Length: 443
Image (cartoon, rainbow, N blue to C red; front, side, top):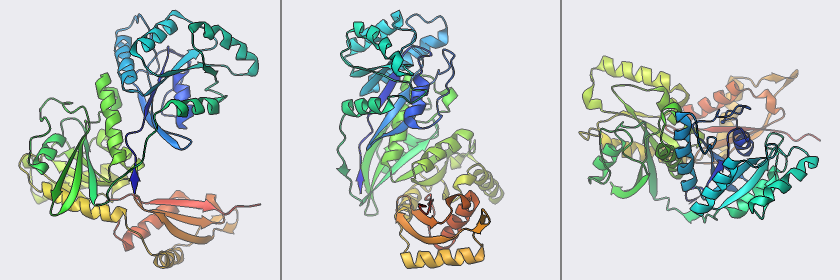
C-alpha cells in the first residue's frame, strides 16, 4: 500500500467580501465556509482537503485582509492570515473584478512579493464574457498572468484548477511497509497525548506541560513492542473552532488532520474527569470521515471513582455521546501511572487487522442473501428493489458495493442494516465500514 506525504497547502488571500469563502466552497464542493455579501463574515480560517483532478491539497480560506483594521478582532485576523501564508506552498490572491484595484490590494501584493511567496492572481466576479474587459485594469499591477472567474457561477474554475495544479509541488508516492502500524494520538489540548507517547516509548521525547497547546507540530516516533513495529504520531490538540485563536493553533489543526490521513489507527484520548465533550465527538467525525481505525482511550483513570457503578455509568454516557462510532473499542488508561497503556497497542494491532479484513466473495454473497430474506428489500416506485450482485471492493476501510436496480430505493436505514449484519458475523471492531450503493445503468 502506498501513502503520500503531507498534502500541499494552498491558501486563499484577499480583502473582505471579494468572494474567498464562495471560491473555497466551489473548490472543495462543500458548504464549510459561510458565504454572505457582508465584509468580515469569515473570521476563523476554514481548512479542508480538496481533490483537484488527480491531486489532493489542503485548502485554507482566510479572513479578509485590511491594511489598517478599525476593529481589534481584525488585527488578530491579520496575523492569522500571514501565518497561513507562511505555511502555504501556493497562495491564491483573489481580487474583486467589480471594485477594481484598491490600496489594500496593492499592500497585499507588495507583502507577498517581499515574502517571495509563489502566488497566482485571480479576478473574481467576472460573471460573463462581456465582463472580461475588466481584467485589463489589473495588468498595471505588473502581473503577467491572471485568470478571471466567477466563483459564484463556477465560471472558468477549470482554468483556475489547471493553474493551481501547475504550481503546486509534485508529491512522490512513498512505499510504506505494512509491517509498521502508524498510530495517531488525538484529542483536545491538555488531555495527556504527550504523556501517553512518552510513557509508551519510555523516553522523554515530547514536552509535557499543564499549559494547553504545548505541542504545535505532529511528531513521528518509531519503536517496537512485542516484536511489532509501530510509529506513534503525537499531534497538537484540536480545539473547537470558536476557541482556536492564534495562527499557530490553526496550523496545528492542519497538521493534526494530516496526521489522521497518514495514520492507520487513531487513538482518541478523552478526559475521564470531564467525559466526552462535543469537541471529542467533532474529532471522532474527522477520523471516521478519513476512514481510519479508531480506539477510544479514557485517560486520567487514576483520578476517578473506579467502582463498577461508576465504570458502567461512564461507559453508558461515552457510548451515547459517540453512538455514531459504537464499534470503537473503549479502554480505561492512565498515561501518568502507565495503567493499561500497552493494551492500547495490543488493541491497535487487532483493529489494524480488522481494517484490512476481506470477506471471501462467496461467503459475503450468502450473507447478503440471508440478510435480504430476513429483512425484505424495500419497494421503490411500486417495484421491489433487487440486488444484482454485491462484493467487497476494498479494505482500510472495508468497503462493500451493492449493485441494485434502483439506487434511490436503498434508504440509509437499509444500508445501516446491511452494515450491522456484516458486523454481527465478522470482526470489524474499531473500523468504519462503507456501503456503496450503485444503480444499474439505464439506456
